Length: 399
Image 1 (cartoon, rainbow, N blue to C red):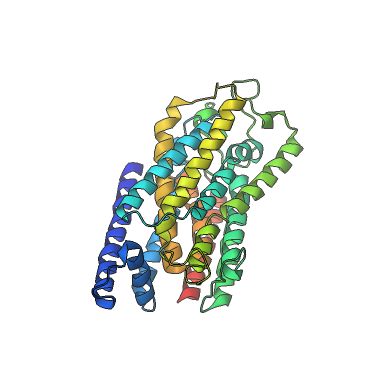
Image 2: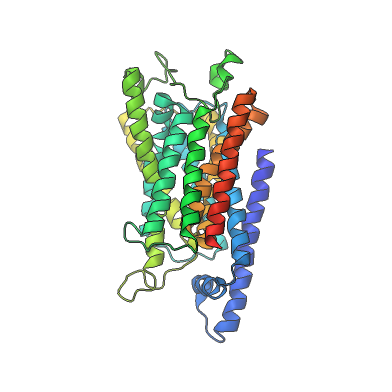
């Protein structure tokens, strides 16, 4: 089922790219006869000439949001029953898969200009991502995801809406609706914290039954085993403090990953900028950003290997699931780039940062039977309603 969904979404992404190529060629022939401005210029021209009639763009944008939410929410499924140890090897495998996705996209797009500054966004994401395993070991995935998703939403939305870090503030036609939509999406993330999982009562084989999302317990596994890590030496109260601070740190970094790309785009029309002429099509920067992810994760992995005296903890069973997980993450992020193009980051961030929590919860309910009881179902229904309302409000703020 996962592979089928992955194949379908890949086909959808490729079809979208092909449609963009066709529309761009037509736009060039209509508006710039006899002049070859290259593939990069075609995207900028097509987006600039057609953005006023935004019916098709809105459709592309919300379909991209839907695919991103589905894949981000399902990203943990392939590795649910696989031990990933301290996470450094798993992250490196995942990032290799992420870079592979960007390579395919780069070839399809005709190798657009490579802006090294976009790699900074990938480095920021990879730095935040190495904190995930310590977060899960200290405060659990549920609380950790709640914290970092909330700060991811706030940083990404606020930096785009108010123009932080040198980027232009993004305007929407109905700012009040946008504020309310972002607030409802943030509130929905908080509600997920009140859903309880009874997965640990189902089976004694806890290693094979870690909850997909909803688990607030401190992971104390690894005590005296080969999976010992520095977090296992911390006291419970210190664990919660350290885990919460790491989750805030990760969320702020996750929410900053698109800032370098937005900065390049915003300065593309300024005569005194070295980014003059840069593409306005966000997907043109995927290869550069994902290269930053893979390069940074490789550096961290080499540092880890050195610290372990060239005896890193490698988990062979996590390689294929980790690669599938990375492909899913890569496709989801490509769709997020498309959503940023067609909807703007101020609209896409509230939807894509909170929607995956619902999808992960549905996996836990429908497939893994981790959530039971009418009270939990009512809480999930409330969170779903808030996400839907928040998404609709942010959508209407753009129209």
